[in-house]
Image (tube, rainbow, N blue to C red; front, top):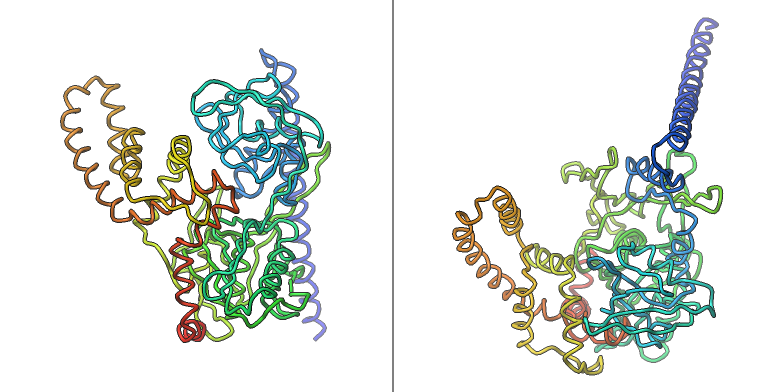
Length: 542
């Protein structure tokens, strides 16, 4: 017996020793490589033939190091911290406009209602030329945003160009800008409440709660639609708060597990719900991520409502922000989150910074409270799937090339846009859109077109363009005809996307949502299903 105890003690000592040795090895490797890094950094700074910017060089090194992790683990320099914080809080000091990069310039993609930019007359599509006399050409979106932000009451003189019609100047007084995360809610036909939640910034749960109670005071509601399409996420606690609007107090919504399995955190609902019985539909799409997936996944796992739309993004990773010296921050992935059934919906794994999709054969099965089968590792699969792969390719391609956006800018310049309640595009606009795509040489709808474009460049470089071009033109003509036929098949859906974009540019986010609920195919599917209580109930009991 004594010998057995000695062996156990020896085994424990060995295990502890191995753990200590591993820790010491790790510490030594870190210290060794830090010393090598600092020596190289110092030597390059002192000896390199040209002047260097130490801060930029260090930032490049940090970014390169973190690229080996996942896309959510990032270094945030001190000059970008305010911008990062504003995405969490939903407010900042500036002129109140979102920008995108088009060629060499930043272009306004959205103006927030009643913000300084809106009051000054700036609109989506305006090209930003300079700020306080400093050129904005070739600057990143982040740098442009930083130049336009400032303390409330300060002024910035903006030079902009609208539709290539000469440059204009406007002086804007910066204000605190609050981005409303519930820009639109209303009661739809059949006494169905509709709430659009655009981001899980501060007070998301409180705002959804207030919106629902306000509509309940107006009508005896029959059901509710919560729209999370395009909502890329935000604060974890707000995901719990939004779920709590529809789920009883004390229910587990999500748990998070990191390296230390003993430190698992469980998040439960803390308050009484606004309504735990009202039939509920949640709309999701491929951009619904993170906090959106917690809400949709929890509602699905608890059999509290029906999910309609497309498979969500699949982000089941939790980030923590760490303070660094001199005001910088590190956003680092520290855990995975798990929804009530026990599944994690992270769709990809990362190796050396590269995404590896999880094969369907490796996805584990879980069960909802009612016993429905759900899978992990691939986002939230809707109970009712909408759209087709063919349609997704078309819409995504047009969006990624900003063609809906650019057509809308042109349309607004040449047409009067009616009020949100009555604005509807005629079918003739579809032909105009096809002509617009032709003028833009839109050739990125299929892999074949991309291959031809690449082949043309190589043929030109090798001096054989004259020989192959006639044959390529014939092929392109056939592809063009096929492309028009494919797009014509989805004329209704494409016109809806155009109408939504035009409405948003003219009537802001609230106006576009007010317009789209009357025509939105997925909202109509939700309304139709909610009218049929037997269908709704049967989905939740499958």
